[in-house]
Length: 282
Image (cartoon, rainbow, N blue to C red):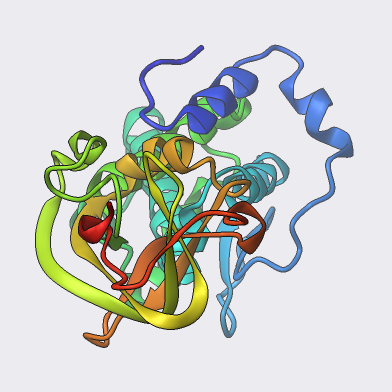
């Protein structure tokens, strides 16, 4: 198992990419044709809602983008366009490094300075100039490092892994994750925002923890600003999506936050906490 990546599905993908027969394995994998980022083998100017990436390994890149969509929650919790553009930049950063290392004479001085400035930015922003002049424009046929896809795909995985460390979402908790409760330690690296509430929810006492389901009451809890890297631990705690389901919901403050909502089938025979606050349990 590749332990250099923080999110285990990414580590598993890295191990698979490193297998000698990787390209043969993915040869029968359906490609992801609906992606806002289209992977192409030939450079073409981007059209509406698409970005083209020129690479000898467009097929492998397309496979990886599909895996990142289905095997991680990146596109569930972050704007998909944001994620895709971030990964496009990762491809271009890798291609620039290849050009610098293996074909330095093929890079005009002006282009080198421009790419180093644009691709060192820690954001997915793609300027119009970068869209029109990415490193992939001159990489085809010039860089031996791209003869195998491994390093290129590993670079994209490393960029995806960074998102789990640098991107944050807001979380609403109402039970064992609140301050002073048994599972609050899972939020020790999270920023406390304050108290909030959710309308049209009923709270039930399942013994060591509560469960909220849609209803007529008001649910009270706490809000935290959390890095994505915490979410796999929360998913395991809540047994998402089988016992609780992670959902976006609008709180009474007007802010949209992640909440773990239960299922009505799991509260049969459990007492309701009418006040909507877990701290009022008996």
